Image (tube, rainbow, N blue to C red):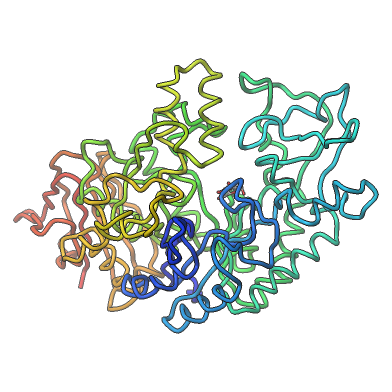
Length: 558
Ligand code: GLC
């Protein structure tokens, strides 16, 4: 058993714009996070990941950075961030930051210099190519739609590459000077005492650029860029270098946004892997096709969900270590994705919490998930801030959907579903801000779902606290963190059953992922109930568990 501090961590992800507004301008900030540290401490989390707070024009929610060394004034100052790191540390909470190094903002000084002077050394910091016959170098579609090449103004035939928005030019990692500059920056933040980084879009740093027209895969005549820029051969040299030069000497926690094929996973998360862990997308993107059109339903089943989650468990425990999550700032709320509308209630929310929090790996809880926040309902496209949402709406229209259909499909998957302000209480703006206008509309259901109304033992919030506490302390902690994951066969797809085993201690997790009563025969050695989302546990004389709709039960052999 290889012990590491980050394996024992429970992480809470904050979307700073929407967590807590301390200065009353309608947008969350770092002082707001500082104010809420006691809440996080009571919840029991030990690491807080904050989405980007660097200087940014905010074209893509801060993932377009114009200065890696400064906090954007909308979030506060560098001093505020220093204070957050110190105050959190005093409460036993480490801060991890977002690291966005596949691209910068087009407003970054490097890119500005590159544009201003074609002969400047900064041209080679990015990827510029000449066009062909008045067209871009090839027909790649960026992740956010439209061509991945943007024409340089005032130059005849010159384009730059952007895998995301045109305000996010891709950096040229082939250039040694770029990598050196990035490593210096990473070390600057690590030296301040942060715990590590969540690493954005890192599999895109190596590109296989060809000047030609590829077979289009959409109505727009373009081809999905991922085939040529995701995890390309040679990337491992840079990932190793990045780790050796920065994370490793700091004993950092790193979690990369990286869907790595199983056969390559040990290079990434093994003992001497590039990262501590990576996020797997197979079970969170289960409802959309690989090319990412939100309006195309994948028709997933519970068997698919189980297959992906269990595969991820088995492969990560074999090769290294996994990250567990159901939500983040790029996903809609998990309860709306996995559970039919009519079945959304506290039982199903607690069931989902049990399912993922009891698996092996480091759990990540996204802000509001611990109180069971749900997707939001916008009135019109104007209410959406997210650039991807607007793009997806256009793509749906282009594919022939009516405006209503496109709106509904967009709403179902919009990233703004999870970016609405945190719901603290029933006061104005859910206690998020005193401003008359918040940067994004508060979900209308805040009078029903909020932190203040969940200060009782039957609440979703209390249940999350119990799951976190079980993992952090007491006799089951070691088993939950380090125990092996053993899936159990069941004859029904809606029964998710698995064990966690360490030495003689065994935990059995039984989940009924349906709105019907079910039963499951349990071995007699599991005689002790550790936690359940129903007050009454029906265990009959034949030692069968009678499971109510969406029941989740944790049993132990001692
Ligand atoms: C990652 C981020 C996402 C962002 C994208 C581009 O996927 O999680 O929010 O839009 O990278 O930086």
